[in-house]
Image 1 (cartoon, rainbow, N blue to C red):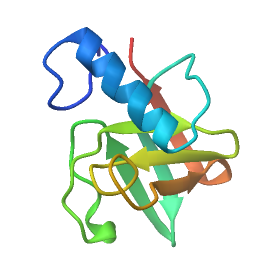
Image 2 (cartoon, one colour):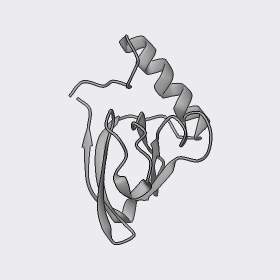
Image 3 (cartoon, helix red, strand yellow):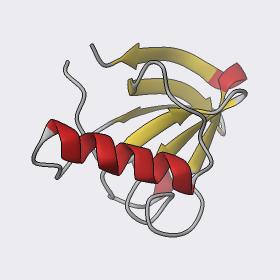
Image 4 (cartoon, rainbow, N blue to C red):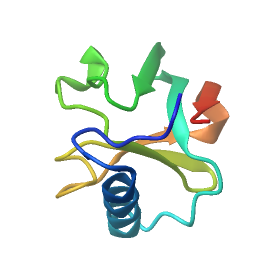
Length: 103
């Protein structure tokens, strides 16, 4: 799957939005861009995918805009969780079951 950010109309706009969100959540430069992850969260297996709604466990149907690798944790960003306000959702690397990257 080719890299994208939901609602971005061009590749350059997607790059700009991705960089802006990354700066907002203090993410390091991303050599590879994460498309989706699966991890254990409070005993449940959750899956997040860029462009899809958050899992129901988060009681929020916002769309995932970006997922950043920040060392020991992955930061999952939606409009209100990481992109504009509040903190992103954290998934500890030790709880990751699988990671898929954009091409």
